[in-house]
Length: 512
Image (tube, rainbow, N blue to C red; front, top):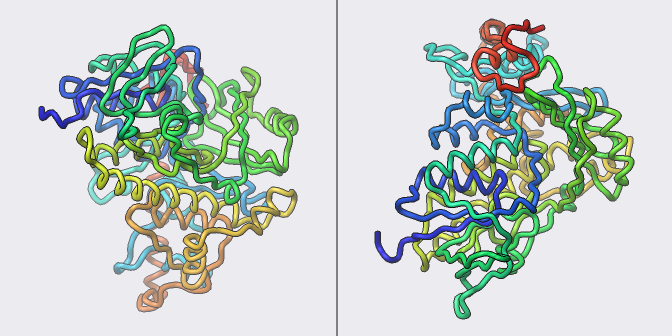
């Protein structure tokens, strides 16, 4: 290896962010080429509420060579086909943001333009009839997909629910087996180069001095390296996403274990519900400006689907991001890089995205300003596109039953989101750039689900005769309905493939 190559990389902090970083580094770079050291302390707890994911996590695990069934078994996991949103547009509303696409492209025109015309003519039901994931999720069915030519069952986008702490433990074993060196300890001092400001070494409390060429900060909100040492600064987005508190509490396992996350809006915020094999993950995200902690706790505990297993755990946060995710020879990952509420399960994805973007521009020891600037601009766009997608859920409400919803309905929003809304309302146009996480079908799910009205559709749709349109829409619905009904029960799929020792049902018990 050249002398300019990074040969000693130090990760500070464990948890999901630290061990995802260690696992990727040890697998992709190899510890024989670059020594990877992770410093963490048992005295410092982790947040551990990021239990829902989105489809890119499947690609991440595949890249590492992790077998899905083994990971699900070890983390008490279940599968996920989308997110159901309840009471968001107005009280009583319910819709799903399913993974995957709606319908199929017709004559090179996006499906929803044809659906819009058919729906307006009264010859088509709502969008859910054209999503395999939506149909399967509501029937509590799951299938990973198989090589079936020209069938919707050939590829079924999915993600996971899992115990985040168990996932971190799983990745710790994986990483240590590949040669990652874990050191138990707390950092006392961070020593910088007097001229460049680069971090050179870490001095531990009652421990050794750890030298490094490059450092990864996974120390959570405090940002021990990226903020306390390098004074990077923070972009505050709390005026756009005002919720700043969360309560998390596990409850007993529920049946059936639905293959989707639930997000249930209420007067002070929204409540998540995540079914795992051994328990249910619950939490309430709320705004301290409009609710005190006791009120939030009462709402959460009064609306649990099963008996609580502990007292609620409190989390305080400020929505936003570091002004530089990568600053000097330090990369911040996880909560150290920023935070956006888990409304669309993006927390773990952003860990993955930062890691993979960093790999694509993996630097030498120094002289990487061009790469660093490009990386920061690129990840900044992704953070902002996710921010806008989250704001969309709050802005598109007609609720007026509380101060929170009145604020959200009337708040100023970024120009980038305003433009998207105007395009959709003008002609059902949904435009995105290639660096955005969420695709056009994701935007459609929320726009339509929360009753954003489009005035018309692509005029090219009118070249298809109405009789042909009706036939295509009917055939599409029938195929998707048949495919959904053919999929196995979600619970049975888990029992047959990846049930953990803590699973509520034994393999000899029947599934209701």
